[in-house]
Length: 330
Image (tube, rainbow, N blue to C red; front, side, top):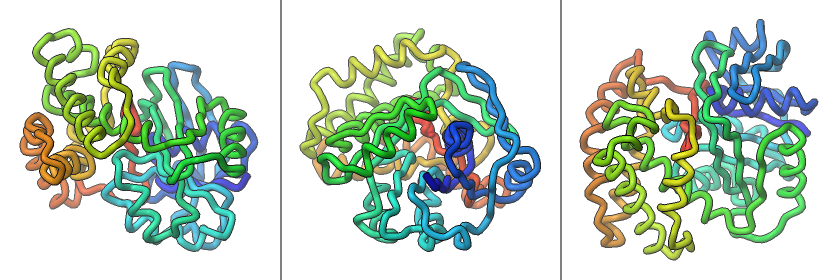
């Protein structure tokens, strides 16, 4: 399968390396020092599931000459979605599937406006992956799960084929018949974990160990759960309890990608997480005071990074927070 990884940060490099190791034809879109490292040295993965390296990978800054792909894994930060989608438009053919592993609940709609309704599938990932140096990824927490499906639900031949390819690469892949549910479950989780880790400047384990901060995390989850139910998304009644139990099993030192972005002075995906939650809450008349507190407290940091050339980041090397329970929780 011809696969293009749009955004060679932590999540993109990690899944792309797994697929390349499994023998798939993978190309990475990157830039700057990361592009140079990928071209010269390949990718190095340091993982709790076992270290490995892919010494020779194909990496480009402009993917247009590569032509149509079978699969595009969309792994840029949410604020780079529009520019990245335009960059890969020449790579979308009649049979191309585009799966976003980004954070948020509005990304597929944004991609579909640029790349076409048929190409875009719904998707998400759980993986604590951080690009710690050009071409080098730290994978912590032990989870590497990708869930995806057709945006409007139901079975699909292409979906099952992609699921098989991902599983052959040792990815915990799941084709979902109603991908809205896991997308919102992930959105709920990452709003909780990113909000609490960034506000407290602590790891998941430290937050869970302190009753008040644990209450903050659980409260953030509860607000987004209420938003989902208000929109008719059938999250199970015990969704918040399930997420709390899931977080208890993670490596105690796990931190979200938004935490790493905040610590490094980079832009945050705040508008696409807590900002979205606050706006939806107002529209649906669902109270979101904790999401608003996270948004209001972290917004000045995001604005400072956005206005700073050093912190603004940009295409196409962004690391999706998806990744961790959100990750990227990028």
